Length: 137
Image 1: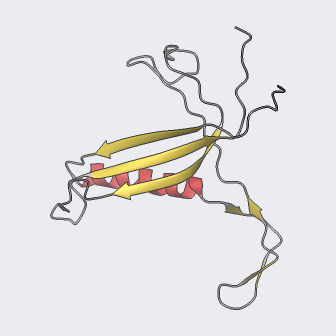
Image 2: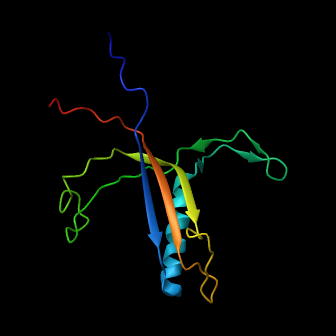
Image 3: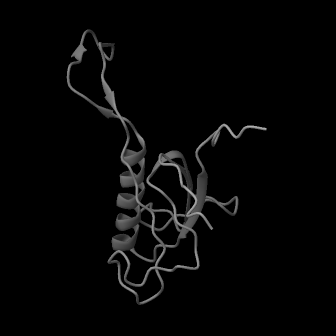
């Protein structure tokens, strides 16, 4: 038997629930959702021309944003290595391959007076773009 190497990159799913109590919190959640949405989409590179309407001639797309995912312990800070939780696995550099936003996770849409959702669930799927290698153990 010959090992041919890994056949695909690992994926990691995360789900977050938000319960904004006021407009400033709802605004922060809206910015978070927009940032993830923009971060998963390809970026437009140079060398393209708009012909008519929305038709592109010679489009050049650049890769979407690359994400670094680290797990930290409470109170450990955000500096790499400081407060990092070594009991959890390491995730290599990744891209977002799927994103789902649900404003009615309990099958009932509830809105604040200003129209912002009472609850939002965000689900993200990341796929690594670097292969993890065994440390030989």
